[in-house]
Length: 257
Image (cartoon, rainbow, N blue to C red; front, side, top):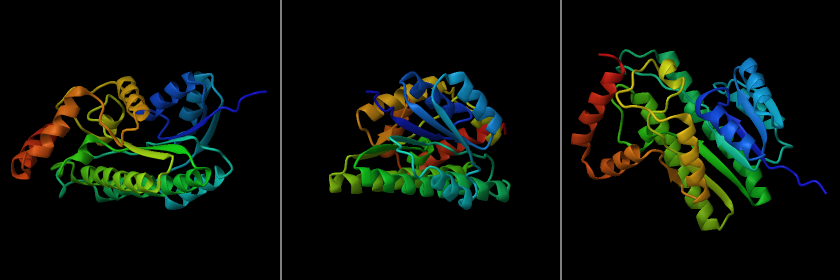
C-alpha cells in the first residue's frame, strides 16, 4: 500500500529563502506546491527539483489573488505552509516611493494575514499542521529608521504569530505556528530593496537549515545565525533611546549614504 506523501505549500518560492525551502523539502520526499509571480522561474525550479510539484502562479499584492489561490488549493491537504512572500525598501520615510510601500504592506502584511488565516482554518479542522510565517529580525526591534515601513510590516508578522501560537497552546491544538526572523540573508532581497548590507549575510541554505531545526524543536520564534540571535537578546535589554540611533546608523549605511 502506497503511503501518501506529505505536502508543503511555499509562497515566494521562485528565489531566495522560498526556493531553498523547496529544495530542502524536495530532499525530504515531500510533495510541493510552489507559488510566486514568475511562472517561468517556478517551472524551472519544479523541473530541477525532481519532486512531485504543483505550480500556482499568483501576485499576492492583490487581495483577490490571495483568496483565489486559496480557493484553488482548498481540496489540498497542506501539512506545512511556508508563508514566505515579501520584500523591502530602504531610505528616508519622506523620500521612499509611497506606491512601493503600499504594495509592500499588501504583500508583507495583508497577504501573509489572509493566507495564514485561510490555511490555519483548514489545519484546525484536520487537527494538525505547521505554519511558518517568514518575518525578520527587524520585527524583533522597536523600529527601523531608514527602513521604517519594512520594520513595521515584520513587527506585525511577529506579533500576529505570537498571538496565534498562544491561542493554539491554550486550546491544546496540535497545529503549530511559528515565525522565522532572519537577519541579512544573501538573496535577491538586497537588490529589490536597493540596499547595501552593513553586515555580512548568511546563506539561504544556513537560514533554512536553522529554520528546520527550530521547527523540529517547536520554537515559536526562530532566529537563524548566532550573531543575530545574540543581537536580538541584546535589543531586549537596551533602552530605545540608545538602540534606535544604533539601528539608524546601521540602516543608513544600507543606502550607501
